[in-house]
Image (tube, rainbow, N blue to C red):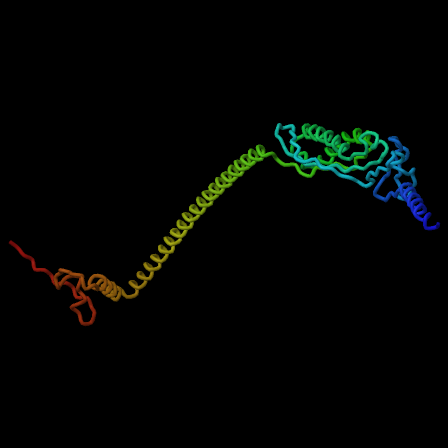
Length: 306
């Protein structure tokens, strides 16, 4: 008889276990739990722990929907924005947010993150276009970038709060030139660099010519000074030479005349190619006819008459 009751006991025990299992739920530190009873929010559990609810969620009694508690992020890539100068740039941005009001989050977007992020993306796109449109491209690369991000965050705040979200941070990951603007900028930078190179080259040529002219002038001055000094030295040498000759002549005029004649002989007939046609008793050879080196007076030419 006991064996006949065993299946019923096991079935009852299974029902009890199923009821107990469907009556509890666990919330960890990264989650929030929304308890929905017959389509209405009955409770929100934000702290981690073990909680109880009505069983039989399949009968729409109590169902639990989990939403994230930690910081979340979504990205918005390749936004084409126009700056105040009229040029277009591509911007990548991201938003960090938290679900601070799970009940409102459930009521507005049924707890769907994709729906909430889609609405925020639309608002973020419009805010970035507005903020960039009021400034130049350089602002995004300067200290003004922080104030730009605060403006975008302020623009998103109202819409985020209406969804039960809190915007933690808004950041720009990339700000690049579009392909058209990039090519134009490249050509402009290339032209500027070529012009700068030509200017540097022209300045170099000018400096080179200036230094070359200075060097040439210095060479002329150095040569002129050297020539002047050489002329002075040559004049001084000639004066000393003349003085020496004069002193030698005053001491021994006969020897001086002999020495000058010997020097003249060496200059005149020292070369084998030299040919002289002179009379033997010429004044030039007056020392050749004397054995003691004394000058022989030239012979007196007899007078001839008609």
